[in-house]
Length: 444
Image (cartoon, rainbow, N blue to C red):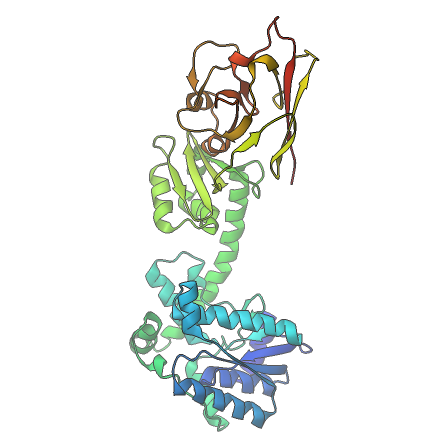
């Protein structure tokens, strides 16, 4: 069995013969076996134990046990205590999530403090099978069905090649005791129900059920590599412009021409927080009316004519007063220079406007476009809704929301910034002085 673990570590490239590793030691059979096996194989290890104070005296019993074990084996032990219940309440997460966040945050910091190359945790084959079944029940895609990975960043799992039965037989063979978490013996949560009820039943049907499921996860991990490569290429081919910049645009006809629009949509949008229900709704609206929006905590997806446009959710845009001539910074990316001049040259640039100064009253303001805003486009007569004008020039929905206007003291629009001025402020033969406003975009 020791050779089996050694071969697995070498095959997966999990540990270095010269590195220092932290063993997450709870005191249970799995972590105790991990500690003893890595020590026997000659790796440099230290142990870390977290007391979450969730099981009363049982938590203290576990701490005493790992202290005694590490003292006996002459292994450096790092201990930490957490008020897990308070943390869960403060951060509004479950107890399980709180314990996970606290544990791994501590492990990461400990690795930095002692110069460790990684953290070894004692997940084994049965844990991977349980995770597979849990994700299967949730309706997971291919990524969720690949089980627990042998390595995830600094976290390594050298015992994934062993079953729980093999681990217990090993401990029995060397006369090593361990503690048992009583909460693992009650089928009150999904994982425990699978461990205590489902897996035993599957083994009645097929003695090698767990082993075969584990093989399936290995096959799926290999298939996932091919899948990911193909999806990444399709994603980059479909996104207009630069795939890693926003806004991102995908043409609906091009998406629908792919072998699996559903998979491609998932791979594109899931990293930005879009869930399965939203993806299903997006697919059902692809041939519908323009203007539909779907949102997550960080991003928005717009259906705009024959395009899907993904952009970061916009923070509320501000309004800025301009009381007099001068230089003004609207935000980190946008600068304005406002000046009066006797030079009557008319600007033809989108980033610079020239207005009849006699028709302009300070203070000016730069603000986001608002519902009901009207103006008279330069060279035209009669008022138009700004929203209609932006629709006519086929401006994408996310850009409409970011559109700025420049107004005078009466909140009358003088300029759709970067697009068009209001005809009321045009320069005529009677103009004697010009108000010139220049906009500069700063690349970040």
